[in-house]
Image (cartoon, rainbow, N blue to C red; front, side, top):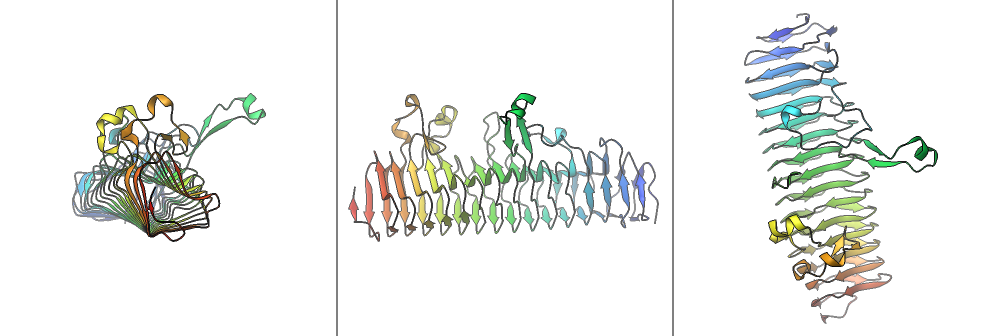
Length: 454
């Protein structure tokens, strides 16, 4: 066993002597096939502007049982493969003060926020059973592949529990990223506080899981991301309006409930699957704007203020076998004119070719709403950007659903060729089916409704 000094370079298997050590310049792993066992030792930085343990260009390095505090990043691994990070405890890393600014979710690796662990251009790594709570960010990954991220505690972070930036073909399983939230104050003057008129934004783009910039083919299974600014935040287009789709990911058996904003946000992306997740008691359960060919199956959305599922200008989604109860709207779908994307994304000018099948929609304000020219699905758009025929939803199928005990069962507004078949639509208080300027609607073999065309 060795005692860490001010600077420690590791070139062979090393076990630290238990204790607490001031190591302001951190530790460097300078050889392949090396294990560093902290053995419970605590390494402390100075000023949160250095790296606790650095690994650059290495293979088959293992770091375990180390406690790190007061560094900008606890562990940084770059250009390496076969790395294992296990049972480490990292906290008090570099942080933009909580409850100040709205976060930038697009920062590149060289400008990354502080956090417990930073991986950049890393392949075949395992990050398991680490305690990375109580700072701004838990795990930050940039341009990584084939990671296994399992059993980590990334709760109570004011930024991102687990972050992906162009990270692909990886598994995120059994992690806890609860309470990843922050508050951005706005208009907080002494006068507004005294008058109880101060306000701000709860969330500030903090999130349990941040998934951006072409992060694809990942599996998220059995994770918890509750009470975050968002639970899972997947963004497929950059601020400069460049395509960066986060496609073909699987979200299964996760719980992202109790967000003040959105449990699962997944925009401008294709082929994602959401299976058997919980998205309860948020503002929105799922927000899927401008997405295509996604599947939502077996999810639970209960008591979301605005909607269980909300989507603007989405194409060919399948929503099957989900449970929507006591939401503002169970499934809220709409189109609107957005100038930059009207030309760039012709396939996403409206809601079309959806299959909504076998869902339970009960005790919602509206079970299912399908409308053109809406803002957030509920407010009419200005007349100068409304009325374009390309914006009218069309060719959507509503089949085999249980739509009962809502205020309104199905609401159609400026929607064409809507197929409503083999549903139970009854006991809805104001209307089973309400149509405003709707085009052809086919009703066939619905319990509680007369069949035919409207």
